[in-house]
Image (tube, rainbow, N blue to C red; front, top):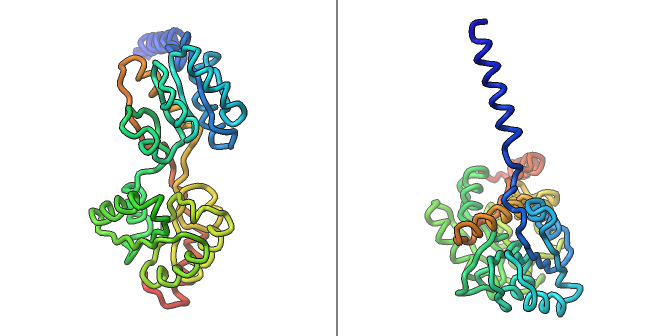
Length: 296
């Protein structure tokens, strides 16, 4: 009872602080921001919604797929405090025109390939390969081989980085170059003999939904676990999937933009993501492995 006055005083002070505290992103008021969206696909829209929330009514959105000439004209003629590109085509245009002001890129796997030596700022879409391999080692265990199907002209650099990261983690990467669907199916038996885990990476040759579904089903029937990079892989039967939160990505990009406007400093950052573990697929995989006498 003797401490009651001090408790009430603490509550009053806390309430006053809450009431007087500025709302989130209050310092975004008055900022004129331009957002260029490559198209209206769902992930881009989710990232846009997360970004816009920070700026309230200060964001003007332009859809590059509808009127590219008008978007380019606006970039050249109008002045904004902040420019944000969502998607590869929007990023290409923004860094080509090079308006004065803070520029961010979102929803691009490898923005460095577009921006090249120019100053890069924003959030990548690609999850760091070393983090993916670390999660595989932790959740699935040290594999005898982690298979990667890839198109040489698109992902050779990523495969080299994956091999270097795997070596540091005492893991083994087995890379299989493919150029088309028949080559994938021809390669799978060799992959099944040399690997016990298949890691999918964003790749133009292995991107179609029917092909992914086929590979995941065929792999698990051979005792091979699959790991994917979005919710679709999880739903298709992969034992694990790395899922980027697109709306959260947009919100983080807004924070990054505001910080860049205050400090003038900004770099590329990895995306926020969660790891989904498919208990049902893992249980079925263990059953298949027992039937085949596969030790794991």
